[in-house]
Amino acid sequence: MRKFVRIQLIIFSILMFIPFLWMVFSAFKPLDEIFMRPPKILPNAWTVDGFRTAWEGAPFATAYINSFLVASLVTIITLLTCAMAAYAFARIRFPGNNILFGIFLATMMVPFQLTIIPLYIILGQLRWIDTLLALIVPAGLFNAFGVFLMRQYVRGIPVELEEAAAIDGAGRARTFTTIILPLLKTPMTALGIFVFLGQWNDFFRPLIFLNSEEKFTIPMVVNYFKGAYASDWTSLMAATTMAALPMLIIFIIAQKQIVEGIALSGSKK
Image 1 (cartoon, rainbow, N blue to C red):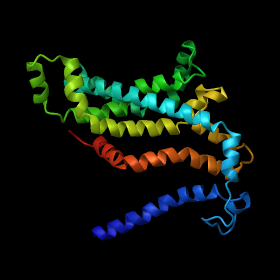
Image 2: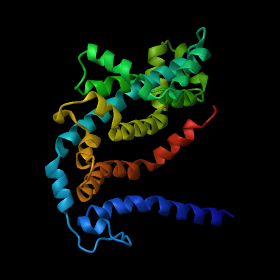
Image 3: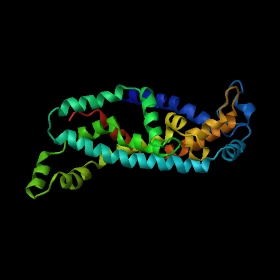
Image 4: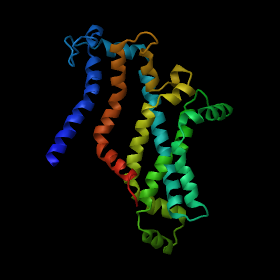
C-alpha cells in the first residue's frame, strides 16, 4: 500500500512539474516552436534571444533590487511583530484575550481587495503612494496567519522556563528576548520563507500603489511582455523564468523548513 502511494505521489509530482518545464524550455524556443502541434517540451533550435529581449526590454536589475528590498524588510518586520503578538496572546492573560484573538483570526476571511480602497486613502494621506513604504509597512505590521502559527508554537513551550526566568528577576521583555525568541527559530524560519515568497510574487499591491517604473518589482516588469491583444511569448517565458529562479533556489535550500511550517500551521498545541 505504501509503495502504491509513493508511485501516485511521483506521478502527480511529475504532472505538476511539467508546466514549469514547459515554461523554462519555451524561453529557449523561437516563437513559431511554442505553438507547434503536437507540442514538444524540448526546443528544436535553442536560442537565448528571449532572455536578451527580456533583460533589455524591462528594468530587471532595478526590479530585482526593489523586490529583494521589499521582501526582506517585510519579512523582518513581520517576524518581529508576529512573535510579539503571539507571545502576548499565548502568555499574557487579559479580559477578552480569546475573543480578541478570534476576531484577529477572522480577518483572514476578509479578502484584501475589500480593504484596498480605505488602505489607498490612508496611504495617500501619508503621501506614501508610489513609494516602497506602501508595500512594506502595511504588509509588515499585520499578518494574522503568522500570529496564529507562532502562537500555536509558543503555547507548546513549557511555562516552567518563564517561571524560572521570573525567579531570576527577568521581566516580560527579557523573558521574551532571552527565552521565547530563541525557541521560535523553527516557526520563524518557516514563516519567513512564506512571507518572502509571497512578497516576491505579489503583483496586486504594486499594481495599485506604484506608478514610477524605477519603483516596480519583478511581477510588474514581467507584465511588460503581456499585451492586451498579443504577447511576446518567448520573452514572456524568459522573463517568468528569471523571476522564478531566485524563488526556486530558496525552495530547494529551505524545503525542509517549508514542510515544517505547513505542519506547524495545523498543530493543535
